[in-house]
Length: 253
Image (cartoon, rainbow, N blue to C red; front, top):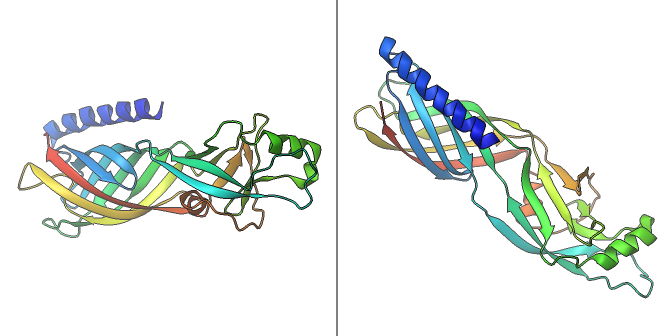
């Protein structure tokens, strides 16, 4: 749904920019760019508003990047006989970043390639999905948690405890704000002036707020743990997301 809306938005932007280009010198060029960076693979269209400001609209998506790691379980002492409780669990985290973007580049001089950028990204709230690799491996943990609800066992990821569902599986996610302001800087012009093709390098940060850690659809609170998780653990603490990208652009109008 996000992808369809973004493509429609960009198509309307192209038609609007093309119409305005016939009337005056504002939006008198349009370029198309493809970029690769920490937000994934992206594409965008761009046009000048003035000699000092350009606007860009596009979309980024992350390929199916998965991260596997081993995390410890939080286990109370004196487990009764009859429960097969493992000490650790193999989990996998999947990054889910599909975002639209609307950005404005400001150039200090007409001939400058250096620019400052402000704008926003927008997309689905869920950015990380977490699950155990072996299906149903924690059925005994599920049974124990049902029998002893005050002594729950779960996977320790950062400061959070993820407990298994009724099928013996840990399912979790990390959610952030759907609207994500962006500030950054870069070198290169989104709309080449002297040549038809060009290259840009950009760096900045997305402000997406404090992450929410969800476990089987329920938001968790911190549990003062010292759990592992590697990349997944890091993502539970980030309120800003670093963006670095290289973009290749070409004028199409």
